[in-house]
Amino acid sequence: MLKEFKNFILKGNVIDLSTGVIIGASFGVIVKAFTDGIVTPLLSLIGGNPKVPLTWWIFDLGIIISAVISFIITAAVVFFVIIKPANKLMAMMKKEEAAAPTAPPADIALLTEIRDLLKR
Image: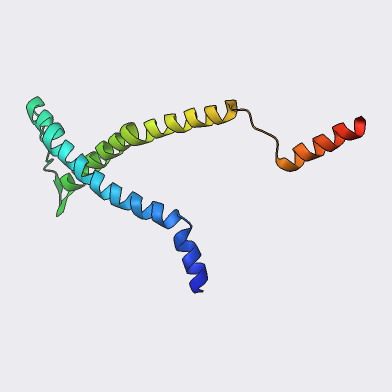
């Protein structure tokens, strides 16, 4: 069981996932600063209230609406700053790999040589 756990840890998925979580937490701070420093003042300048005071009975729905807006801003920043460039980079790399000539495997090359020798 320890050997399986070691293989699981060293496979790379856990390391990638933990790195993603750490980067995501750090990126959340950047997005919050962007929202607080740029978006909130722009909303205030236009005349909107960034903290929506909306209560229904005993529930404060304004907090939920603000959280949804914050999530949409975070998702948009992640998509346009990380996902789009990464997808473009991956597409370029796949295009280069497809264009690069690939040599046949060693066993196929050997069989080709044997075939050519037998023809002679």
